[in-house]
Image 1 (cartoon, rainbow, N blue to C red):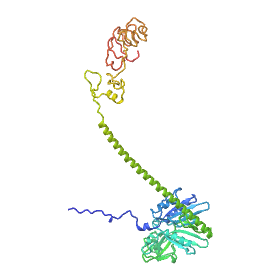
Image 2: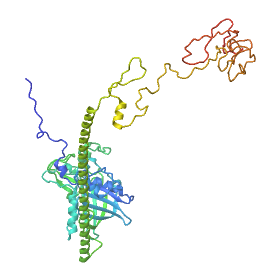
Image 3: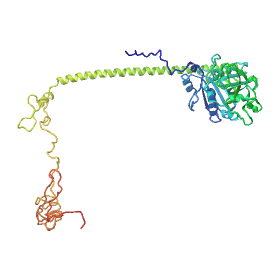
Image 4: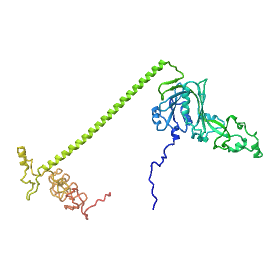
Amino acid sequence: MGRKRKGKSVRNNLNVLKEPDDFVNAPHSFVIHKGLTGGFVEELTKDFRKVMEPFTASALKERKNNTIKDFVHVAGALHVTHLSIFSRTENGMYMKLGKIPRGPTLTFKVHAFSLAKDVISSLKRQLVVDEAFKHSPLIVLNNFSGEGMQFKLMASMFQNMFPTLNLQKVDLNTVRRVVMLNYVTDTKMIDFRHYTIKVMPVGISKGVKKVVGGKVPNLSKCTDISEFLTKSGLLSESEAEDDPNAHVTLSQKMATRGNIEQGKSAIRLSELGPRLTLQLIKIEDGLMDGEVLFHDLIEKTEEEKEAIRKSREAKKKLKEKRKKIQDDNTKRKEHAKEVLKEKSLQGMKNKTGDDEDNDEETNKNKNSEVKRPKKRRHEGEDDWQVEDDDDDAQYYREEVGEEPDRDLFSSKTTGFQRPKTFHAFKKKPRMDGNSQGGHGKFNKGGNKFNKDGDRFNKNKNRQGGGGGGGKFGNKDGRNNKFGNNKGKNTRQEKTNASNRDFRPIGVKTGKNVRKFSGKKR
């Protein structure tokens, strides 16, 4: 007995295409550029996308005709929560950070920047690891605890752009990058830096550290490997012991060599770029629009703020009113379409019913019509005749009251009758001149080319049947151009020329008949 087949259950089948909760709940971002092109705006946009990886659209391609609404419209399906915009005007370069979909929006002026390629090329030891960009970076804020709501908004905006870390479940191997933001109180500037994190073991000799790190040591100045491991003077100054403040105790085992659990390690930072020097200019309540909550350059009185607030509310009400009118017009048009559709369907039904009634009436009329008398041909008569029991002429007299025309109900057949043969034209006389004194074109007697005989024949007394009567005849009486029989008709029909055409046909071959070979003599 075979095994019982298990049925499929939607409840037990996990959706493999479903995204994990950690990925869905993480903040995602769009990084785009708008405004004037050039000035390394596009390169800076690409570098900032590298900073926001992996929760950003790295290959996003925007167009000039794209608006903010286009990105907001697709943000919900892609779990996008923040929007970063780099723009350039005649006054300088700006960066805007907005929370989708309702704001707020922070506007920064970019006073100075350095691209990632320039930063990396300036380093003596370049350290760029692609694995580091598979996880989001740490965010470190310094000196954002000043008075004023702008500091709180800036701190919360920068922190919420990156996913939060659970210190109880975090894996130290995934912490490979860090973003640092430092607020300078005197200049009101923000320094933006991006680094990669490297962990190195400490508490062991330099030679052992190089061997553990997987590097091939240079033993050209050593007589033995032990001499390399014990003497520290052979190392360069850059490989000296790190600052003790950078030493940490690891709570987990790291994937790099020499970093063990509960062991001491040193943290080194290598800059990846880009570098940005920012200044906060304005904070808006909405997304790229709304009430201005803070402005660093312009200060307005309470009366001016109230007037602006009232005008903004009036615009908002007008916009809602227009939207309501548009919705009503749309509903009215849809209702009119439905009514028209119902009317057309009802008309189609009525038309179908009328057609059925007309068909019934037509059938009744056909059944009630008087059957036409059958026509038959009487023997010995040439015309078709109708029986006398129902005469068309009599019916016409009864209905119209007048005498019909003579040919109205004529029983004679009309039309063209096909001839017995295929050719309906009249026979033409033959060109061989068989008939004596005929009406042929080249014969004697009554022809338009002849003077009492033939136009081309000098001997007018000869008859056209035997000799010289045709166009090709000779004085000797030869019948055609190629024959020399005198006075005899040697032509013989080989085809049914009487029913097909009337051109001359071939002649019998004999001693006295010349044949045309087509060769020159």
